[in-house]
Image 1 (tube, rainbow, N blue to C red):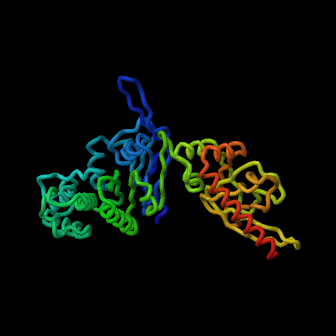
Image 2 (cartoon, helix red, strand yellow):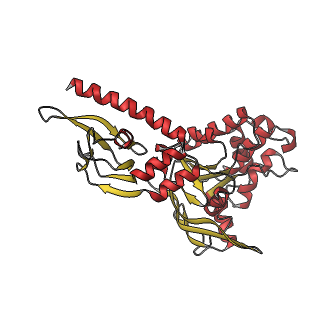
Image 3 (tube, one colour):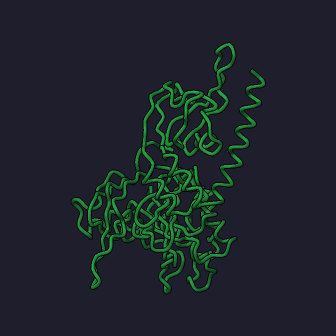
Amino acid sequence: MSAAPMIELRRVVKTFKNAAGEFTVLKGIDLTLYQGEFVAIVGKSGSGKSTLLNMMTGIDHPTGGQVVVNATDLYERMNESQRSLWRGRNMGIVFQFFQLLPMLSLLENVMLPMDYAYLYDFEERPQRAMELLKLVGLEAQANKLPVAVSTGQQQAAAIARALATDPPLLVADEPTGNLDSRSAQVIIDLFQSLADQGKTIVMVTHDPSLTQRTNRTIIISDGELVNEAVARALPLLNHRQMLAVTKTAQRRRIEAGRTILKREETVDEFFIVESGIAEIVLTGKERNDTTVSRLGAGQFFGEIELLRGGKSLASVRASGDGPVEVLVLPRDAFLNLLKQSPITEETIGKIVQRRLEENRAADRRK
């Protein structure tokens, strides 16, 4: 996966106006997606996920902020016509309801973007369209009308059409929403294959099971993004609870090798690793340090002391490999969160028990 950004949203705001007044759907979104990532955007109905997608595609205009896609600012200097042509050459869009033209064959539907974007020689277009239909397993249906094939095959044809101009970015809005589970799995397999080839895939979905196949999951709640480390650390919270943690937690940066917590120190906070590596260290009788665990993004520490009382059972430090950024939740906020989510409390309780057993085993070895 390349380190080059494919999509950058900077403080993006979208406000709709109607007779009842103004309603802000996106509330200052900051987000960077990178080349070669397969990304899922999830959220409840009305959370703003489709509006967020429309900002990325240039289909809708932000009220404020900046949208840069593949190093191009979509709104700064381009008019609607220029943006449409740019989109045709740089972005493939897959819709939930396919949007195939009913009077054209699947082959002709796939050729349309090439015609519109003035790409490839006229004689080359049918051959390229057939190659794309073969890629999605539809070469035998190439000359059929959309109504003559299944819904899964229509969606596969829509993906072939989205790839017609060989765009680096593929954006899909609920692409499996109207498919059975087998057809949906075929589509996700295809997306995974395309991401492996270096294309960036951004998929809005309401199906949380699909996120197991993606590199990243972006959660949007009430027009704001949940911190990804929070979502990974506390996956059993509902989206609004995750957002509350995102807003409440304070971010701290600890330089490489520096101590975050000392053994026997009173712990009044819950820590979530946002980036870097935190090392859990036990000190033996001869003052030799033993690293018993290395925690990466989305993992946490401090829960044992907050739930069982007492002082820190081990020292925690930033790895010597580089700095660590942690999200810090005060004791009262952490305990209140567990009261709101009994299933999270139960899960963390099991983690506490396992870690205590690991620490005892490590102490015996020393």
